[in-house]
Length: 225
Image (tube, rainbow, N blue to C red; front, side, top):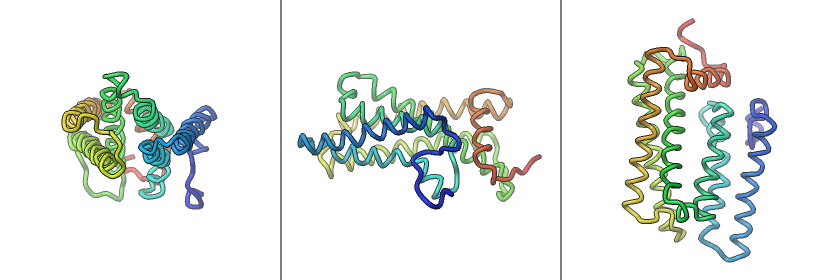
């Protein structure tokens, strides 16, 4: 049924509270877009519009690469976009709180590192893939995936500043390098945790996330068992 339309959320897996939260967050972006147009804050128009579009990222990933993220990650992604764009850019939290940017980039590093870890882990477990990757390589890929996403985001901020005249990069080079370092630190924490989880086969948050990920993607056959 996913092919018929682009879903706002995954009704089958998200709770009623998660659906309401998704409605509220997307509604706030639409309200901010209207307010930006009415008040003449043209610098906020592209931020509001792009942010609203980004909230559909889980559905886009599901349609493009046929992979469904666990509901907890879908909600965390929505909250991150809300914190980065609505609170950070529109309500100026980046200016009000010096630690806001560091918090979000550290969070994004962990979040993206987890996504990268899950993707390559499932690919490694799939019977259709001939290569059997080690825990180190899976964790290293997660680190590289998260850092690459951080670089792409910084390029996005730069293009927004150049094309639309926004001020997403704040202090320029210093802001960019600080963001990338925090992204890498968060991703490294996630990668080390992933490596230890696979080596020791621990029962923790990550291992439970792997289980939920496999439950949401039953078509991916396992090599073992």
